[in-house]
Image (cartoon, rainbow, N blue to C red):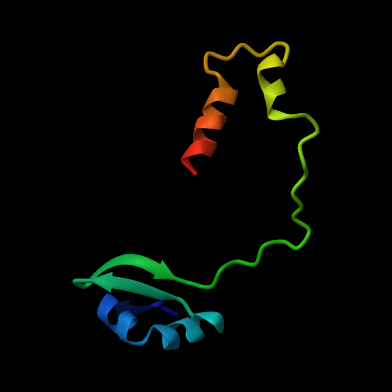
Amino acid sequence: MAMESVSVAALKSNTSGYLAAVKKGKEFIITSNRQPVARLSPVEKIAGDLKIIPAKKPVSTLGKIKGLNLEVDLLADLLVDRQRR
């Protein structure tokens, strides 16, 4: 079965209807000027057994790992990234 195409304009005018269809498993190709630009599909279920394991050591120990010669300062990069957020 081919995936149904829907224009951006049609999607904008009936978003809730298309989302209801997606919740039931239907997929759509979104088009702009008759060119496909995106796919609207149900989110794959994430395994319920996925767990986030806390770090055993603080990030500051990353630069002290033996046998690892880094040319970048991971801690400095991590701190810069955190400040941007």
